[in-house]
Image (cartoon, rainbow, N blue to C red; front, side, top):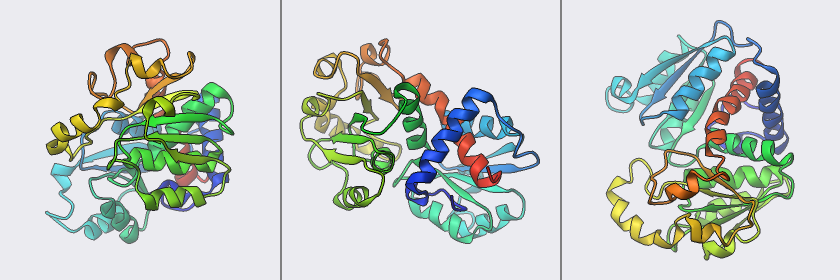
Length: 302
């Protein structure tokens, strides 16, 4: 695994499997203090519950510390250039986790920093979320090879990272989004060219997409920064709500996934997310275990 983790594409198929193995092992057996004396700077332009808490707890469990720096405090690109932030932090901490609007901010941090940079979410990708999602599925089903699951909703950063990671781990992902909101052609081509034995397919009809899957995954229709499109998107995505009618088209044992926060009554109903088939809380917890593995591999040489 390389120094930085700005994209799922920064790891190989074998390395991604290794991260999942490590995360499962740490969750089962405990957390060696391999990061004692090390500090992770968390530069967050966007608010967060799971990402901040999971990174802080991951560092603490591994013997290190997390230092939270809000976007208001740092104001990258406004108060001072991204490259200056990267250089200053490189002199004081051992790694940076950046939660940003523009993916360019993450890649610029990685370009100018002398320490590892981890993408904690950008408009292009959410790689740590994808690792946690696949960890959750592997924990439930034992293997990802041949596993089929559906992602219903916007072809956004979460969908893109899931597409790449699914192919690399041998899983088969079906994406169903309204016309104009599908995962872009370039990302589909990149995903399909990746090694690993998995696949990604776009299916126009969400009921068809969920017909033979082990899990149904959804995300918000309007991500942070897209609030001005909320009314337009609500109309476009109306037939893509994960509700009782859609779940009735899936196998009776299909699980329900959501990366949270959920806009209940929009992309998913309260009935579905609170059902016994929901594993969204496992997903949330597994952010911490996934990030422990990522941090231990990058900073601890595990």
